[in-house]
Length: 203
Image (cartoon, rainbow, N blue to C red; front, side, top):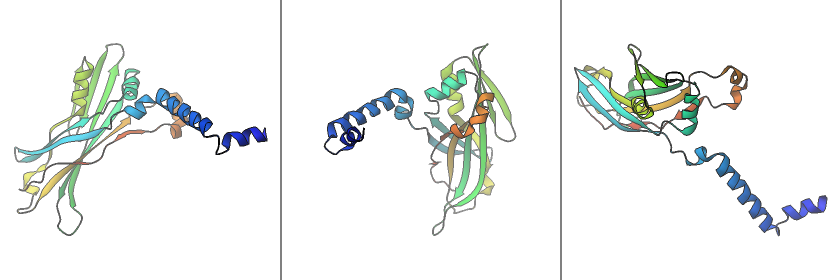
């Protein structure tokens, strides 16, 4: 037993080790393809405009729905998307100053009997639910931040420069009862994008 073990690990047995590494690599590819090849979720097209005396923000979440997410959603597991919007003022010699922040929550549920998606959007003061019959429309709705009011224009100081940061996170809204005993095996936070920046603007 000792000599066999020694031959496998001996530096001369490079061919054996190469085949072992190749075999393990193929197992990883076959077992976890969605992990290896899934596109990274990100925020794009952050835009700030003015509407009725308020700053309104628009943005888009790209690649927010992987195969695992869709499978769990179609099995009846709701998903929560959180969008963090932060207004910042640029500083010359210091870190940029955070002026205010707002979090949007979008929850998507799939009705396995009606075969419909229910998308509920909350911004702290308003709550609205929209029902979709097809997957593509639901995904566009969930991924879109459309002219969300962030702050009054009067909050901006003259001759100062500002921008808006946007980040997205996606979490499982509710775990099946049998999984609640194994939370240390389950990644609760499923999406955590990098911060995306709008263009710089002034008052």
